[in-house]
Image (cartoon, rainbow, N blue to C red):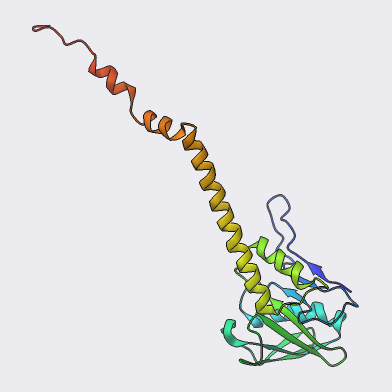
Amino acid sequence: MTATMFDKPAVEGRTFSSSPPPLRLQLAPPGTAPALIDGAWWPRSRDLTAELPALTAVLDPLWGRITHVTVNPAFWPVIPRKVSVQGHVVKVGWFKAEQDPHKLLLLSYTAGRWDLLVIPPETDAVTAARLMTTASDPARSLTASGLIQEAELFRIAAEAEAAAWDSARETVWDSEGGHDARHTSSHSPVGAAIGRLPIPAPGM
């Protein structure tokens, strides 16, 4: 089963606090060829104690009960030894050199191992959506860090293209007299009119 969950828009500008916000997760379609990444997860923070229970609770019925999770400590300030998830405990470990810093590894006794791209919480929505789509693409072939690097290069290129377009529009505007018109309008005609006021005769 493919799980695709994103934030739901607020209703009439309000959000409902009675239930937790939806998980931001997208998984590869079932039955696809094995790949380096099985999907993408976009947590709201770097707090594993707060973020992992919701993630594993969703994955348990899809992949079998998750029993172990490992991360690279590069981007996780605190790594708990275990977290409670709906009546059972998930053990948490970490690897430095052995694990991609942008990857979350999950183990299930019944289904084996699953790897998720971890999208940095501070990522903008457009980039995050692109990463989720790429990470869950059956033709995917990049590592987690490779996906992050590709998204960053795409973002930089898009910003450079936007800046070049703005510069080109400014050049066209100047060539059509926009700059001269702006420069001329900066001089107030009121000053010229005041200079032509008649000088009162003596004694008036």
